[in-house]
Structures are given as C-alpha cells and as structure tokens.
Image (tube, rainbow, N blue to C red; front, top):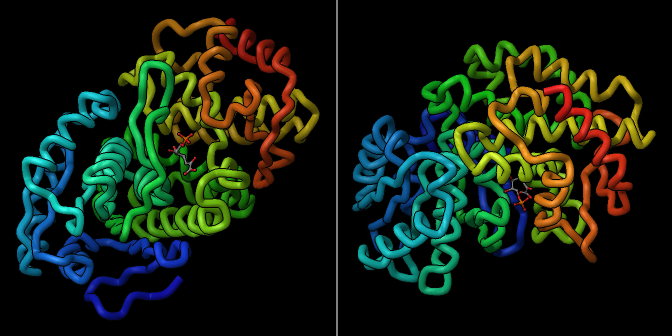
Length: 379
Ligand SMILES: O=C(O)C(=O)C[C@@H](O)[C@H](O)[C@H](O)COP(=O)(O)O
C-alpha cells in the first residue's frame, strides 16, 4: 500500500499484482473529483462511455462528468434500472447495444459507475464488446468498494443461479470514493457490511475483533473507520486474487457465505426480499453453524458471528427473510448450480475458527439438510 502523492485528496492505494494486468485500487474521500485526471492517462482518445443506474446517476453522475470534463474527457452515460433484476440478459443486451450505438472502440474505456450490479454487468459487457474492451470501476456502494469491483469476476444472473454467465475480466483501475458511502440507505450499507464481515471471518480474526468494537461507529458514518474497512478488505482481496486469479484454489475462500447465500438469492428471485450482502451474512452464519455441527470449529464461533450481525441490525437467520422459501432439499438443489460444484459435489467454505476458513469438498449433505430443516422450522 502506498500513499498517493500526485493528487489533492488524501488517499491510499492498494495494488492488485497481476503482471502486465496489474492495477490500482485508489481509496479515499472525494476520489471522484479526481476521476478525470486519474482516467486520462489510460485513454487513447479523450472519450468514455459510462454505465450506471438511475439512483446513482441522480446523486453523483454530474460530479463524475464534471471531473471528466475538467480533464478534457467527453462522456456519455446510460442509466439502467437499479436493483439486482437488471443483472440479467435484458440488462446486458441494453448495455451492449448502447455501447455499440455509442461506437465504443476497442481501445476505449467503459466506466462502471455504481454498485455491484452495475460493476458486474458493465464489466461483462466490456469483456464481450468487440471481444474485449478495457474498463474502470468506480464503485459507489460499500459492497462494491470492498468486494465486487476488485478481482475481475464479471457476469449476470440466470434463473438457474447467481452469476452463472460471465467472464474473468480485470478492470484497469478502481476508484473507491468513501465519501459516496454517506448517500447509501442503511439497508444497502449493512448489506455491504456483510461482505466486510466475511473478510474477517475468512482470514483475519483481528479484523473481526476490530469490527466487533468499531462496527457501530462505522455504521454511524465514521469516515476513518469506513476507509479502514474498505482498505483492509481490498488488501485481503488483492492478495488472494494475485495468488489465484481464476479460482482454481484459494480464491474460493472469498466465497464464504455464498454457497448458501446464492441459493437464497435464487430462491427469493433476486428481489428486494434479500439483497446479495444480506444473503452472504446469513450464509456466513450457516457456514459457521455447519462447521460447528461437523465438529470442525468451536461451538461458540457461530454464536459470536450471529451476535455481531444481530448487534449491527442485520439479517442473521432464515427466519429474517420474508415470504416463502423452498424446503431444505429445494435449497440444496439450488446449491447444486454453484460454480464450485466438482464432480456433482457441492463445495462449501467452512471454518476451523473465526479467521480460519478453508475449502471443503466432501461435506455430508445429511448434516446440511438437518441444519436447513431446523432453521426453516424455526421461521
Ligand atoms: O471475488 C470472488 O472470488 C468472490 O467470490 C467474491 C464474492 O463476494 C462475489 O460475490 C463474487 O461475485 C461471487 O462469485 P461467484 O463465483 O460465486 O459468482
């Protein structure tokens, strides 16, 4: 990590080391005001196409376009509908056709300006447009700043499952303006916090201890705490991605909570009933509960995870999800579409303790079924 010197704002830079595809994640309050100056050196001609969504556009698009213009960069923007439902075939078609109408060329840059939905969709559109154009991520949600804008997983959902259509396509730059987090709703902020908790749980117990102490301050808007949470999450992600870009091994650790979470998102139709980060939070509790039932981690661990999420006012249990859910076998069937499935076997990310996750391939499904059945009965 280095302190950035050439620009006005106080920011920190985390580097994702991927050889000639390495890139910086620039983190700090008001980085958006420098977007034009930071993007300009990447451009072959002074022109970018921005993919965004209407809520973000209403709040911040003008600031981005002003910054681009100040650096002599012309921009056009497409405002998609907000929400996970946009991350499907129809949204992708709309985005790609618009980029073609804008005559985006192979050497141009597409800017993804929004949360995880926009970042994943725009990244995938960039990956397939003219067989691949470069893109820059400007994540505006906590979830996107700590997780989805980094690492190059791009894609869309299908009715069969989450992110099942996609490509690895790394951004050229990530600009995470922590001041933008102040405009998130409490629900969106806490959903992103689910991914922050995931990092502590998967590999940094001291970070989780810090969250237990500082979580409420972070949620209340403390800027230093927010910057620290974004930076530590990005450091951990950058390190794992550099080691295993295409999830052949360790990168699957970043999927802690997602095997359950993705099944729950599919079960709730990618709707407002369950945001992605909420599914991850509930999924982390289930993964720790499963680890404990399998005798892999101390019995206190799942209770500690659940207690922290409850204290933060987050969804913790299946009972916190409104409306009908499939039964245990229905949820297990949805997990069968997970990208980590190998030889037809579901892979889980389990834990030996808080901060010590590992990839498990031979989990006894009857224990999973019993756990889900009990959780569903408690609803
Ligand atoms: O970057 C990764 O690797 C992750 O698994 C991070 C996840 O938090 C993120 O939601 C990712 O998009 C999920 O990936 P998927 O391969 O399970 O679709």
